[in-house]
Image 1 (cartoon, helix red, strand yellow):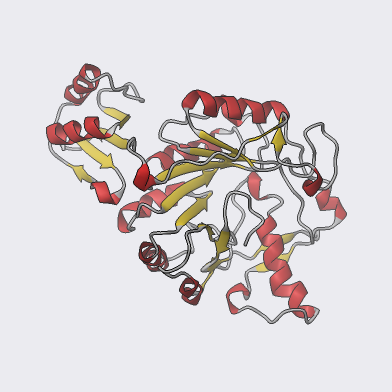
Image 2 (cartoon, one colour):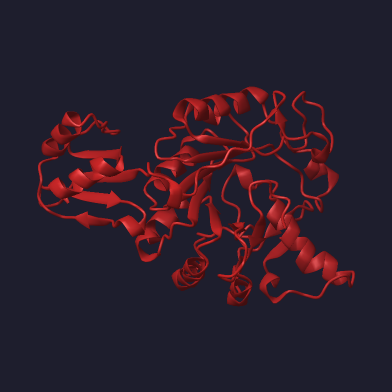
Length: 353
């Protein structure tokens, strides 16, 4: 089992990472890895684990950190079986699934194992969705794979992650706004997103008190704004926890805060992809070097997807969008992006792709 509220279990065929943004400042995973690799083995309370070898260190300030080494252990995947009861698995909670040192063949082996266990739901989270998008067409995105990215801040580089996420052909796309350190809702576009998880910042257990003192409180106004944005966009909202600081700003242990937001618990989930009739298709087009328009229709694999290099005038596509009441998000005849319901996507593909 796991203490992560939105998953039943974790599975870590890949271990190791490197920090990439503000959300990594007080990384719980680096702390856990350090504990497994150095503390427990030193005390004789645990045997060394080969897949944790060399992945963690302690910085000069006493903060647990990654070494940037990434280890893959395919034997971990043998814990998955088609005969098991259905579970939600958070995959690679001790790494970033799309870290630059993660090899494509590792990902393909992992995805193949996911396909063998269709009863499970596998939740993949990354802070590097641009890497995921580059590899997306080389992976088999089954109906039981949900893809998410972390959006902890409102700066443009972090918000841009969502634009990469939209084009990844996963059954469900989600955002983890944890630790929520800014007014993310003010900049967030939830088009094509199915689920938002949020929570406050916590402190690494093995960090010195000087590091623990750097934990930032989560502004209740930012959480409520995110909840309200989800309600308007009809996106499921999951409030995980307050972190070190309670809703009233009092600093105390996370476990004492409860899971309530304004007196109410928000543990909402998207529907299973197999049961949903309203999957969205992402369509992108851009002017090609030959003067025509390059189309990309992105859907989960079981519905078919591909790229067309036929020569079309972008204005033709914009006219079709206007006739069918579909909004071009980029507002440019030569370059655009839209999300279509299944019947719209069928006729779009018949006409253009």
